Amino acid sequence: MSDKKVTKNYHPATLAVRAGQQRTAEQEHSEPIFATSSFVFDSAAQAAARFSDQEKGNVYSRFTNPTVRFFEERLAEMEGAESCVATSSGMSAILALCLATLKAGDHVLCSDGLFGSTKLMFANILSKYDISFDFVDLNDFDAWQASIRGNTQFVYLETPTNPLTEMVDIRELTTLVKKANPETLVVVDNCFATPALQRPLELGADVIIHSATKYIDGQGRCVGGAVVGDAELVGKKVFGILRSAGMTMSPFNAWVFLKGLETLSIRMEKSCQNAQALAEFLQKKAGVNKVHYPGLVDHPQHHLIGGQMSLGGAVVAFEVDGGKQKAWEVIDATELYSITANLGDTRSTITHPATTTHGRLSQEQRDKAGINDSLIRIAVGLEDIRDLTADLHI
Ligand SMILES: *Cc1c(COP(=O)(O)O)cnc(C)c1O
Image: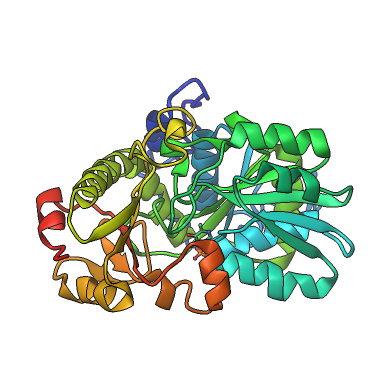
């Protein structure tokens, strides 16, 4: 089992198709799916050595599996990280990180506009274990500074946010956090940007969370996730949680994600191109009051495009004149878009956040988050842009 060692000198697009593969003696070109729950040993002594970690190697697929490892190594290299641990979903990646880093009495500081399930898991589930969570506006640097405590184990944020595409300067925020408490880790959910557009570790972040379900798969087939970071925290501590608690990625899903990574950068480029064109089209359209897209020059964090994040992303949100009724009419009049809250697919999706993804929030919480009844979110896929614009009757 050997292959040419891929080094970190390659660019992400090269690593996406070359990193992480280890060929077997069969000399296969594409990565095999190791559909096996356990592994055999040459002798009782070898079994003992593997179980006690004195010898490296596979034991059981809850611990390690070659196909899963190929995916982990490929994603780690693309993010410029030492380690990656693949998980059964994006949510279990976040849970594994929490179990590895938090104990009763600890504090976590989060940005406000987090993915709904993340916020619910923090506020409703983990808070039962005497861990406290505070939420601050993504760009309110005074609030970040004032809210970091001695027991703040990590800050947690998404950039860009869903659905309003707000961004934050990761480097600036990381500097502030480390000044307030050098022990506090900076965790970035990089699901919306992916390493094809943004690499948070280079900007000072400590840990990256992924929902592989979205752009990494890219074709809406499998649920999975990953924690990415250094060898000590991710390779040892997070891996230790997974090994015992078992939120492991299946080899089949890992194989689908491996194939997804190979086309990630060209898919992201095309989706971003389509999203940019769609945002510019909507901005000129009568009946549209506001368009939220980082690639537009009037976006408040537009200056981060081309630097922190290479392109504007594939999510566009816009507000129509006429409230909820008009928003629903626009959605229902589409023939091409899929009416679904999922995103990161080849197929463009359209959704009304106020009554779906953010429907469980109170009116006051929605107002605070800027999710009004006129808002429509489009996650742009790979269709021809002429068909995507023609399908919107506003
Ligand atoms: C979907 C999503 C998650 C959760 O991932 P699952 O794979 O659905 O568990 C976390 N963060 C963001 C930003 C997401 O979009």
